[in-house]
Length: 483
Image 1 (cartoon, rainbow, N blue to C red):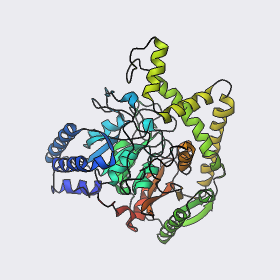
Image 2: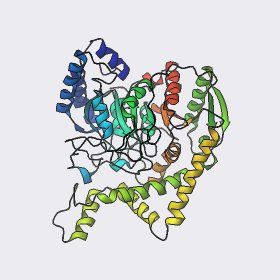
Image 3: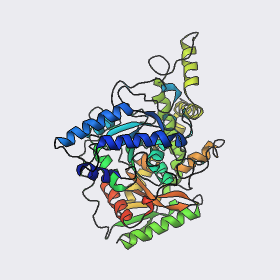
Image 4: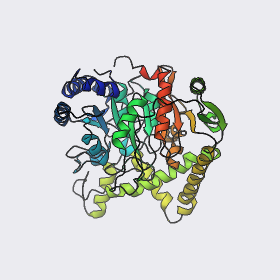
């Protein structure tokens, strides 16, 4: 049963081939057996999962239907979950049990999804490798010596290893799409505001967006359907109708205009990945798509702009973790200043501290105009580049990452080299656009992804293209040895 996709699970449950309780017990046993190799979970919620599975079986017996009813999933450990530890991968929140459900958690639970646990992640979602977690690095099931990508690496590793059919993630600068590419999954970052951020512990509020990680575009459509929608509790949620994301998966790609930016094929791109991207372009051409060269001239400024804006917002968001109200508190503080200093120094890891310091510096009185304001102007230029491009093409295609997964620890002494792994993904976050990564082949036995961008609220178009591509390729069907 562990090899079934979400769509296959929905059909199996509807046809009474197995129950949600049977499926849940099978996957929990598989997690207990295999996850010690991967470290993809922080907290397992066996009792909650079995309770939800039994309830889903009762709902089905009473005639209720739904693609997510009884389907097991996992949540990235920054979605608040009532009564369950929600750690954000940090010592700071190791003892924090959320007093409420995030909107995403509540919506998926209402749809009947069964939550098996909370998945490991880079601390406060800051990282590209899932190595900054207080609970230790997550291993890539394709090669246990390599990273799975981050910050949603726990969700990606668990789904890739067939411990779960699908999981939630969040994407601030590529943190769904990048781990999807490095573990042979399909990962979708929706339009900013499409999925509620209420109850999602913030890293950078103007960039963070929740989304699905699964093996196929069809499964991403199912999970996104359960996650998306307007939320009056989230001031950045967009009141936009939610379409049926599965409805147009089988639409023809005849005449679809695909733009390929020349900037995506720069010096830093591994030549073997470039070849796989070109192979994907040829496959889409065979399906009727029309390829058009385009330019995104301000993409070269994306990394410096992002690494001013994101840390600046992080320094503000993380100021609430002070040892006073909740989370880690130092022992025997001498006074309030000592409480603040030591609680934060002990509770936050090196990467989080580094970004808080960078952000506080960029927002300081003498440097705000020189750094933060300039970065916001560049952000607008990047958005304008996309808007210009979408006047000529329907979607944009390129590599998801410049390199395949690297060895654990290989970039620890040079954080900037890890930041550069997000070079192709962060533009979608700066512009607020939807982006999707899909499996496109292998380099040295490690998966590689191809990335698609679409105009605002066109997630259905991305899913359509990815589904048609997956009907005509088999990369997404391959699973790592031993799992």
